[in-house]
Image 1 (cartoon, rainbow, N blue to C red):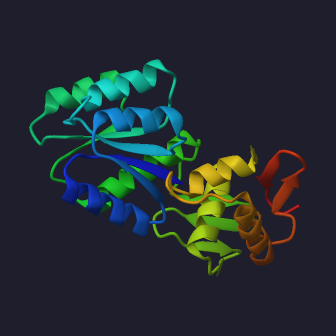
Image 2 (cartoon, rainbow, N blue to C red; image 1 turned 120 degrees about the vertical axis):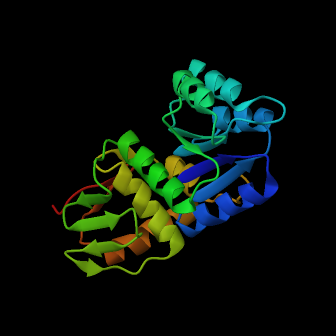
Image 3 (cartoon, helix red, strand yellow; image 1 turned 90 degrees about the vertical axis):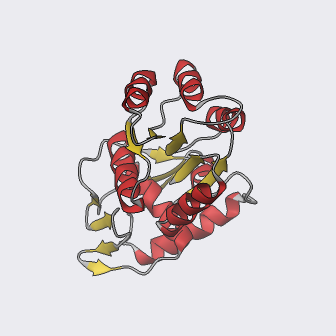
Length: 220
């Protein structure tokens, strides 16, 4: 899953990027509103962490532009502790949630997990597909209760398929959601990760839809 962090304070931006990467997300960052607007309008993100006090374009303007253009990715805005009016304005502009500074990183991660789950129509922190379970809180993956050992890239591919289980996911979608913008993207590596996952999962769970991509299904 791919996250855009929009924060102009370098230390906080680095802390957010590090925490999100450690939680298994792919992270892109922007330090001003102009770059943030461009990235959000041209790249597919699963969620955005958006500070409101940005140079260039303020966060509310960026958010309104995204929503006016039909970009529906979940957005978590960061506000000043006493900025209740900013919270209201942010929600009215199309934000999905807000978090006041200073905040605990664990709370931010929990709120992001919830936003991404809801966007995919999942109510529980545990995603289940047949015998396969992925706990979005711990990153633990199991089949019939047996834990699976996955590499970071295998986990990212599986997590995206789990959030979109039953849907056909193209190779290009997977590439765009498991790599950051500045990463060297190679479609062949996706096939490698899928092949590795198939060896670890029950037969037939990851289906190939010829000419379109992959689909995660329960045990046939």
